[in-house]
Image (spheres, rainbow, N blue to C red):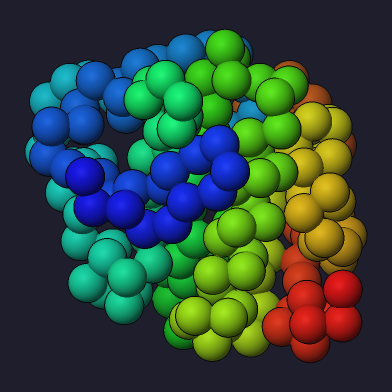
Length: 186
């Protein structure tokens, strides 16, 4: 297991080519995807041929940043996915933070714990200038995680997303962010 970082209760590790079931399960769970995507879930072939190769390529492309499997330290169970990497076409010193956890891991503080650790690593070890996160306006759980992690509300915006509209999409999306200077002052 190639560990990226550890927290009190989680290990965030690089994805491996054999992580097909984890990616497939999370992306196929309607509860997990409720605020993320209205398209049909990927097939096993799409995970093998498109998603995982893209995840694996991120580490080199973004100097070690990317998407990471989250493992519960105590049980060794995969509990979700975290991400910290620049947006497509974005500045290299600005990264997007994201998380996707199995419902069995909800309400345990894992999202906040992982987000705080990624912020610390991004600012202290990777020299990021700014980290941002986005979610649907109606996703109050994710918004709470962003706030607990120290990010601040920046804006509400409306964007055309692929696939059928999700319930609540008429309220738009929100962006939260934190700069390195704000993080150092906390």
